[in-house]
Image 1: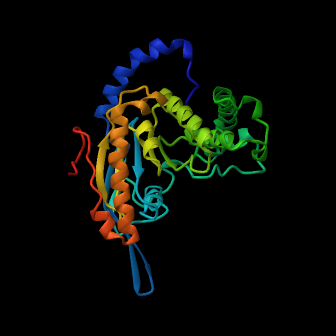
Image 2 (image 1 turned 90 degrees about the vertical axis):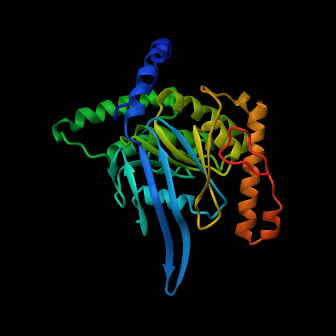
Image 3 (image 1 turned 135 degrees about the vertical axis):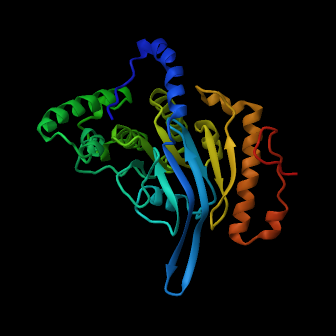
Length: 314
């Protein structure tokens, strides 16, 4: 997959093309289908159920978030999707093809930037493309030159152009995260898995990175599955949110986020945003009490979901 930094002067043309592109995407098979995934970790005679009949879908060009209590199996689900673990039950399909247990079908951004300290910013960004198989070996050197030029253009686009030759230890946390995201974006796999990429950042940098990610995603519309513990972050970024229960994780709620795009930080001031945030906080608090074994507190939690929600709590 070849991506190019957007030409902002041709924004109107891009907007006109967007409708036709969306129609094509709507008829395409899902970028990701997780169907009835169950997994338990076994050690000697004991068994720890982690995932129980988890199903979710990411359509082409869709931003989907996954939230749930700590220890509910979100990262484990990512490992299954990426082929690092094989479930006891269920299937993983991408673009209509079953890929359960197979590796190499996703681009991945972990919680930490995971930049190699001996590689420059540019070389770290190029890593995903370097590892991609090339059918035409005679064109390898030409392709390497092209991808390097493309990566340099992207580094300029994301504000890292002057740091292309810098090493990771000289970059701030936010700059390292931008480089890590760009590495995932330029990888040839269409589906991106982002595992709490902003969790280690301070509040101000995290807010800046959320806005940056929104702009980058809206310009490129890659298929994204995003793990976060922040309900506000999930509502701000997502088209749809899957809310997982405490372990063993199941899908409790599916929230179709009602706010139009493009989105900006001001959407957090919308009363409906606050209503959804309160409702989802109630769901999460209840599941945390269950995970902690505090069922009395869990049963005392009552939340009201907005009228267009999946389920109402009275």
